[in-house]
Structure formats: C-alpha cells, structure tokens
Image 1: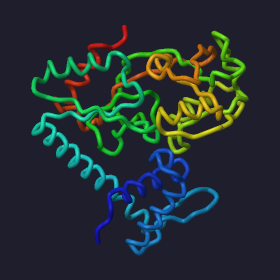
Image 2 (image 1 turned 90 degrees about the vertical axis):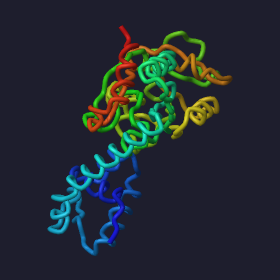
Image 3 (image 1 turned 60 degrees about the horizontal axis):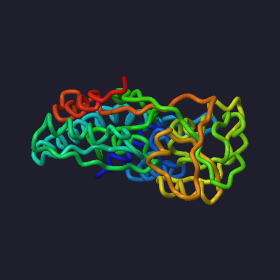
Length: 297
C-alpha cells in the first residue's frame, strides 16, 4: 500500500495538536480540507485513527500505533528531501529562495549580488509565494531558504535571523474619509472592514489584523486575498483597508489607494529563515551570511 507523505504529515499535525482547527492553521489548509485528508488516510489504512468529540481529536489504539512511528518516518523523509535538494542545487548551481511581497526591500538585489560573489557561477532563483503560505515554500521543501515577514506560523521549527524592522502603515481607498490625514491612531480603525490573508494562515493573518492590539475588539473582514494585486484591487474597490509594512508605499503605489502612517501598533520585522536540517548546507549558509551582511544596524 502506498500512502502519500502529505497524508502522514496531516495525521501527525492533528495527533500532536489534538484539535482540527489548530492543526489546519499549522498546515495552512482549511479545516474541511484537513478533515477530508484524514478520512482518506483512514480509508487507505482501513482503520479509524481518531475519536471525534467536543473536547477535540483523540487517538484510537490504531492511531496511537501510527503516531509512535510517524515522526521518525517524516523526519527521515524530510532529510532525504533536503539531501536530494542540496545535491540538485550543487549540480545545477541554483539556490531556490522563497519570498513574500517585497522580500528584503531594496537590500534584496544587494543580498543576491553578495551571494553570487561568495558563490561564483551560482544563480539565485527567487520564488514569490502567495500569502496562503507565510513560509514562502519553506514548509513543504519547495525552496532552500526564505526571506519572510515575521511572525510565521510554527516559527519555532525554523532557524530565523531578523534582518530589519520597519513601521507598519495603513492602506486605504483614496476615497476613504481618513485618506487626507497624515497619521491615524489604530484605535480609530477598529471598526473598519479589513482585507485579510486566508484564515488558514492563523497567527500570520492575526498579526496583519493586529488582533493583539485591538483591545479585544474583533476584526471585521471585508475581503480575503492571497496576492498583492488582488489585495490592492480589493482596497481600491472599497472592500476594506489593510495594514502593511511602511515600504509598501514604495513598492505598491497605484491609483485608488493611499498609504498613511498609523500609530499604536508594533513594527514589522523581516527575517531570513531556513530548515535546521540545512545548518551544514554551505550554499544555504552562504546566503544567510549574505543576508546578515545587510542586516539593519
């Protein structure tokens, strides 16, 4: 019998969390999709793996047996994938770098130049990710290293070095009643509809909704988007407002939206992240050093 490693990874997340909602957020998938995958695994194995109740997802005896073996199986697979990717990178001399939005802002081109100086003949393949995956491909092994907006879900699993911090601003439709103001207290935006990332991104979505800085007022969601263009269109069309890094005003200017300073929320951080498996991966570590060469003073 062949079982997709994705199904095993989904099972392990539910087993560890004991809760479908938390597991779905950790995996960046919807809860219905995760439920479907767990049922598919149970069908393949011919065994019930969980008992479902209001208290959460409890493991059956069969589930406990699989849970004892799953972490080692996944770890072995992850190491095999990492070693294969490292060998492919050495052979092709291409380093896959995931990123979100503007990556490390203006420092991005300098980082790439520094890396190619350290590794002559190598090329950096920059891969932009949708906001549905805040790890920019790191979580599923699609990239070797990533430049990310922190915090990300499951951040403790990765090696992360902070490169820079910058204030957050608010992005408004140009017709908004606050559009003519230079600075807006965040408390005045509590009741505004927001354009948000997908719900499955969990803590990352909450951070860009400033959930912890709302004084208990829940956010109103006017639209959900995954890409910068869709995000800007939703704001321009009046479906909501959004928080963004201050640098977004330089990279995402377009008719119909304005960027304004906002006070009362913490600054945004950009970090370089990689899998601990790659601590000894020389090209990955050269890229990390290249990033740190331009770390904000």
